[in-house]
Each structure stands twice: as C-alpha cells, then as structure tokens.
Length: 407
Ligand code: PLP
Image (cartoon, rainbow, N blue to C red; front, side):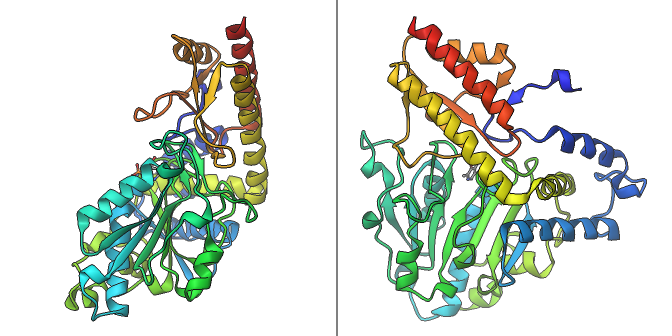
C-alpha cells in the first residue's frame, strides 16, 4: 500500500495521514466494533452519536473554543457558507434593529484574495443590504491587480454598525494569509474593531477553510462565525465545520416576519444548532475520518505541535524560493510578511521551466504542485499531513532544480 502512494502537495482535497487512512479502512468494514461499517450505520445510533460528540470535543479542546460558541457539522462546503453567513447575519441584524431599511444594513468585506472576492460576489448577488469593501488588497499590490498582500491597518474602513464584517484567514489560491503574530503589520486588526464596538457582539465572520486546525485562531472568542470545509487539514470533502457564537443563533422565522429574507432550513444556524448537527443525515464518512485525524492530532500534541511544525515547514520552503529568486530562476508571488504557511506560491521564469519543474517533481514522487488554474505558477500546499521529511524532500528538489537551471 505504501509503495503506491506519492507525496501529495495538492491544495485540496489534500493529503491525509497514512495511519488515519489505514484505520478508516477498518472502520469502513466495522465501525467501533459494531460489526457495521461507518458508511452503513445509522447517524442516530448511540455509537455514532458518541463519536460525533467526541469529534466536537476534540475541536473544542484543541482550538480552545469557549462555551459561548457552538460547533456544528454540516454540508455545502465553504461556498455554502458564503451564502449562509449573509442570510443568518442579516436575520440577526433584523432582530437587533427591526426598523432599519435594507439599504441601511451593511455587510463589510475584507478582500485579500480569490475566495473573499467570491464570498463578496455572493453577498452582492443575494442582496438585502449594502455590500461595502472595507479594504481591497489589490490596491496595495505590486501591479495594482494581483492579490499579493495583506494591507496595512490604516487602510481598512469599517462601517459604523455593520451586520457582518467578513474576512478570509488564508487565501488558498493567492497564497496570502493574515499573520498569527499579533505584533506583525499583517495581523488582522482585531484591536481596532474591539475599540469601536462591544467585542462580545462583534459581527466578525471568518473563512478558515484552508487554515483550520493548522494553528490556534487569534481572537477566536470575538468571532461571530468561523467556518471551514474539512478537505484541507481535517478530512475528506463533504464536511463543513461552523463555529458560531450563541447570539448568532436566532429564530430566522421571526426575523422573516419582521421583513428579513426567509432562510432555507438547511442553512439556518438555529436549525443546525438546535438539532446538534443531525437535522438531516450528516456526512458520516467525512466526520469519521475528521474524528480520526483529530484524535491523531491530540496524540501528537495538538495545535501547539502543529503550529510549530507548520511554521518550520513554511520557513524552509520560503527560504528555498528566496534562493531561487536570488538566482533569477523563481519569482515569489506574494509580498514579504503576507505569505501563507499553508500554500506557498511562486512563478518559475524561463521558457518551459515550469513544465520541467513539475515533470521532475513527479518523477521524484511529488504531485499536486501546479498552481490554481486562475493564477498559474507553482503552489506547494503544506497542510498538516505533509511531514517535515516531505518538505525536506521538496526543498532538496527545489535546490537541485535551481542548480541545474542556473548552469
Ligand atoms: N474558502 C477557501 C479559503 C477555500 O480554499 C475554498 C476551497 O478551496 C473555499 C472557500 C470553497 O470551499 P468548498 O469547495 O468547500 O465550497
């Protein structure tokens, strides 16, 4: 089994730990000694209910999620949440301020890359509020067009009492991420927001799809909603995790009576929270594999372990890319200080060089390095399942490629 597997640097769905996959294969046949496979057992059975509760508590304990916040498992991916957050946060705002007109409600979007741009487009499409751009990182890019940076704090303009403030922690396509260092200029401006409003009620919403469980989430308690598709650090596609603060779980039908848009049952946070994630049949296999991944994470030392590992992995790859830049072979696509720990993106200069790089990597058993179709270039995704040894192999390959191309 091992010999047929390559190192998968793909951006998602992405690599999963070998040990987890082997355990999951057993569970497919016999889940928790029930004699029934995980894909066959009732989601309301006591064994699955216990597993679901354990999975939730593994997220809660490792991420330090306070009791003010619910953890929900659902479907529809990050993209489903682009719509869900708009509906739910507008319903909440309607209940808080029933007398405002639609054009007096504002949704603030922080645009730092392709995914926050998509979420912003969905908010415009759904209507029901003014959609305001709090900052657009393209204005601070090298060429005025690319998403290559996290803008400085002075450039953000937030509305006075928005129904939502939206950002994406890690832009998977463009390779930019907010820093986890509170002293860095690329840290999200949480303090600025806290000074302006009651921080216990900040309508702050974050897409953590491609950085969830890779390191602690700064100011987690101040977030109204944090969501993530599982298919990067946690498990297979099909599972979406939503962490929502209690005050964001509102009766959407009461809000609709006051004029808010009716919210489809399956994306209403009160449906999902009240039913404890089993309003309908949940994605049992992805939940199972995510649960196994979380157990393994806890055994290895939890988020402290992964934060340290992921930092070191990213530093090594960025150092190799810098060496390629100095040699005139590579060109980094992101500005210093804005680079993602999860997705390192760069261009390879010269006729046919990118193809040579990808073909050579594949020969060495490394796949998934081609950049996103929207932006091209190379993208090395370094999610949790990528080991330090995998990164050493990639770095050795990059070093040799630079040498060979330089000659
Ligand atoms: N947000 C981010 C940051 C992503 O990386 C992705 C997918 O890669 C999405 C949202 C969309 O997720 P999904 O494909 O689960 O809808």
